[in-house]
Length: 468
Image 1 (cartoon, one colour):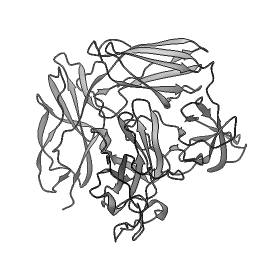
Image 2 (image 1 turned 135 degrees about the vertical axis):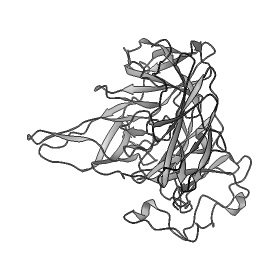
Image 3 (image 1 turned 120 degrees about the horizontal axis):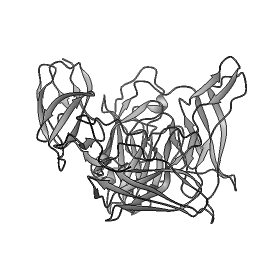
Image 4 (image 1 turned 45 degrees about the vertical axis):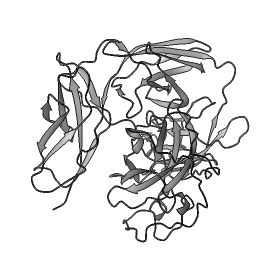
């Protein structure tokens, strides 16, 4: 794929693919005494109250490898994750059937680390005194009052927290639900930090919200919702429409399909065993390519790698498979088993690039060499500090701002998916009098003097219209 990507006027980005997981299992040890660590604080967008029972995994974005976790948030909505600052750190927040990520601090700025502080006792703090109840929600997924936490201590003050804001899903995850264990095919032992997903780019740190994603803890357990299972006419023969793509560093990626017994609709499938085979000496294929922006090579950009299923329905980011482009824009992957792959440049929110197309799949024979060719990215537009988060009910004249794009002749400002304003600079002032109460999304796109798209906002930005 070469050349510049064109647009009729403005290119409106879609939401980044999901990378959330189910909250069934998974835990992590407290950081070692004296180790650097990060504190993740999970709170509900609508109430500001802590959220319990959500998995959090810390990733090294430059290698696409887990650094720590997954850890399950405690009664105060907090997790502690040890870090060695091996590379740019990103979070995978697993909201499960109920919770979707509304905002993560690592989308556009580095995570805050508690350098040189002792974790101390890590016992004794209590959650907030009052927690709002929510109808028809399991208490296992909501924080409750007066619960003690093992993840915080008064000795940490002044602790530096990273607050992730969650919101309840409009459509909670439902059936079919698949659960089971990921194991090593040679030893039969459970595998931690294995990613299970239907959605593309599970480990892409996009902040999406999928109920069909999970990451295993030390027990290797997973549980995923909304798995598409269909029946063939009136025959009673069922089949799984899309495979579960299971990935772990050091192992072959598996494409798992469960065949339900004929004539039986299985809304709840449990006890599944998914085996992953370790990589061997024969898995030594290579894949290369080049990243361009407006015809110029892009250096220092993280490129993700995905595995394509036999049904060619999509790709999921492979744990441990990421490459950094050099000054010439080239990237290189090595040690690959035979199979079909796609590459995805600019898959990290806030990394300054957005890849809007789909790279063609590259088939690798055993020990073969592949070339993905030239792939074109756009500048990523990010909202800047100071944008309104709350807007009053009466006629509201408000200003929105975003980061500039080199070569942009004008910008389009989108509200809830509709182009409502154009601007020659990186800001608009608009009247929001007609909006209903609740959350609204805004985005920005940029075109050059030739009407070609040169920049796009990768993630939706949000603000809330207050109820009168």
